[in-house]
Image (cartoon, rainbow, N blue to C red; front, side, top):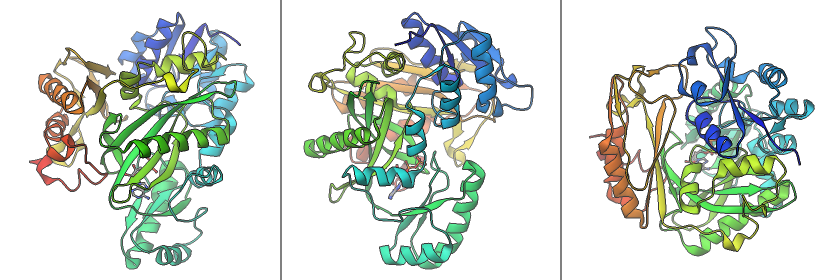
Length: 460
Ligand code: ADP
């Protein structure tokens, strides 16, 4: 057990601020890092101390620089690093460098990050744990020819996926043999440039799928619990747009099976800290399949917090210190006492223009008025009048969460909150999100991952 006195957040924007909030509540001194381009960003000023990494012209590299993270920790007596999501969060090299320097890494072990970092390896772990996976290739495919032969055997449609991938990149749905080679080449190229690995594998594609994922939390003493599920089926280009907890319209036996399967996978690898096991559920058969584990905090952890009352980030920090799940400030020793109340959903408000193919917009936010009121939670980075939206980073402006006793009440509250926003100077996807909130399929809790693509009304 080593208590954390000073925590560096190796990330930026809303998640950096989110982490500082929990650390502050635990009496931990917070440290931010920022690129030159982020020198006016809010996360810099929300921390107790802040240090610039790199110089002008390296806005992304600044958040990928392991040596600088370790140097800052040593120079400023920092005893823990929280990596947030994206950037270095799943990089075993950062976790290892922390370990070697006696710094606590707020996340799973190096071994877990290494084993789960490759999706084909993660599929094998799920199979060993007795959890169903989609039929596909056991490992990366060596050539278009080999892939095409396998795809023909599996039957189209199939999906090509980057083994080291994330964020929906390096993925291609292939519906016919004659499209295979071109899709394989482009997926390989995209994977190489985005993830530094050309490895592509194949899975059978499910046409009518719901994306349901289970939040896990494990301590360093072998205890592991789940915090129920989230429905992240509302997606654009395989990226989540709206997330819901718990999943509306999910059969209780499917929910129980998913939670149990997630625990089995977590146990298989001795999972510690927060992680998410993702599944696809075939809407027609209710059969579920493992797709991947995300060994980090996720963007959508907020909705789980809203319905369980558990501060996931605070728990991550306490568990990283070596506290057991039974610690009074965590109080997650007994799975049967972890309950959800009502529903929560989150919308990712981005500076993307829905009227123009969701093209990211940049520039100065001239006016910003946000929503508030009962059951509304906002997690924002630099969202204020005068803030500058840069082209270098993802386009998330603010995450809006709404809670309600019933799903429809939570949705109505979200729609009301979205209507309250006034953002000028940059385009946002708010008008699009409002249309999602009024859509019958969405209100019925019936969305599959193709909902946005199959609903042209959302764009009118
Ligand atoms: P990433 O790590 O890039 O987010 P995932 O493997 O988590 O990739 O998949 C992201 C999304 O892609 C899923 O939520 C789903 O919408 C779609 N997808 C992935 N695999 C399949 C599949 N086998 N069948 C249907 N859709 C899939």
